[in-house]
Amino acid sequence: MENFRKTDFNEQRIRKITHVYYSRQDVQKAIFSFSAGREVVPRYFEGFGKRPDSLQYPGDIFELIRKGATSFHCSEELWSDPLKISTDLNEKQLNELRTGWDFLLDIDSKYLDYSKILAEIIIKILRFYGVKNFGVKFSGSKGFHILVPWKAFPKEINNIRTSDMFPELPRILTQFIMDASKNELTEKITNITLAKSDSLKYVKDFHAPKEVMPDLILVSPRHLFRMPYSLHEKTSLASIVLKLEELKNFQPKDADPLKVQVRNFMPAAEEGEATELLREALDWYKNKNPEKQWKDTPSFDRGSDFKPVQIQNFSEEFLPPTIKKILEGMKDGRKRSLFVLINLFRTIGMDKNEFEKRIYAWNEKNEPPLKTGYIKTQISWSYRNKIVPPPNYEKDYYKNLGIIPTEEELRYKNPVNYIIRKERQRTYQNNMDAQKKTKKRRKKND
Image (tube, rainbow, N blue to C red; front, side):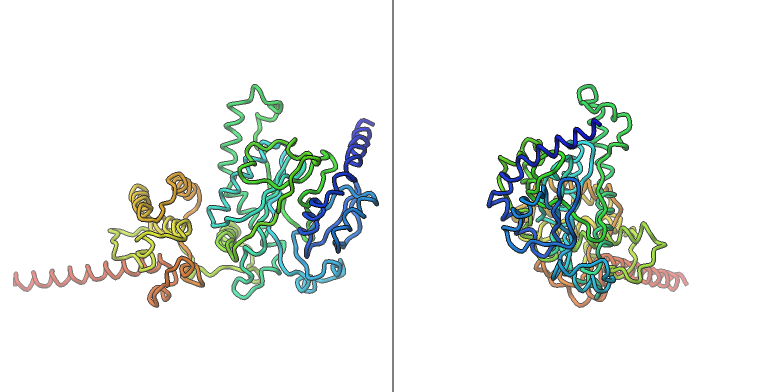
């Protein structure tokens, strides 16, 4: 009976504001513009409308509100014609209809404060892997949505269309990011537990942080999520778009539907800027699941299966020309160059003190230098994760830094292979020189 009354009260409350709120032209425009190429499904408080459906005109939104709709949900998948989607279609037919997919990180938690922590960690991870443009919005309840647009991902991996790999690739990305964030997430929530357990209202859960840890919801085929500026039935709050600097101090009252300012949720991403993120996620998944069959799953060719090596008596002569060029200092692509150097020096087993000394010395040559705090964060992050090699010389990674690999470098495929080969050549030559000296001494003694 109590639950019934609560549900009845929520319904009455949200229905009082739907007509006023959704009559706003800016709200209609925001929802309609985001709906392009997506399956859009209205919700009628407790139940969804028919599927498939889409919006043809901004005015469709208010027409649905008049019929009793309270919120709008859409697909992560992008379609050439959403109205042609059917449960009768096989995988091949769906792939032909699907033109791409946005990567949506849906943070689920019992507590908004915990969701903030995970959102901030995820943003740090995205930036570390070169993803600079992403959207952040309040879910309408106790979580956040972070969106990396389809434009940011490569359209093919080894001749396999990534648009066909839904929901597999978004799931792998989600699992990779959750795994990458878990240590820092556990540490920060534990610190909150110890510091504020006497004052927070949900102290009863603090004895078991794992039970209240925020999580990421895994996507499924035709997965729907609440559209930007759609209302939430249980809270009557709007799913508002946030600036990054607003996330830390965000409070639910900021999502009052009668006060919100409309912003664009879809960021202006650069073509392929999430390529390195996807590469690392696939490598991580393959290492974690060696028993999986990868016949139909895309995989970036790193040139070989890398394992950390230990270069003895490291010399500057071993460095490939591209790395020497980076070490002269960079004007553009400094963060991507830092990513290359960190992974290279760690992969060849460079001593941490020497490694950091070289990184900071390189940064002084940059115009302008990266902030010291940023470098410290990237180094710290690197040491909390497994060692991975720098990017291969394949495609345009180094070209985009303004550096063209030599033919010799291309033969070795990766800077680490280049250094290993040079080190072996030096060792071989030293051994040969030593043998010659030994022979000369013996002849002289004879």
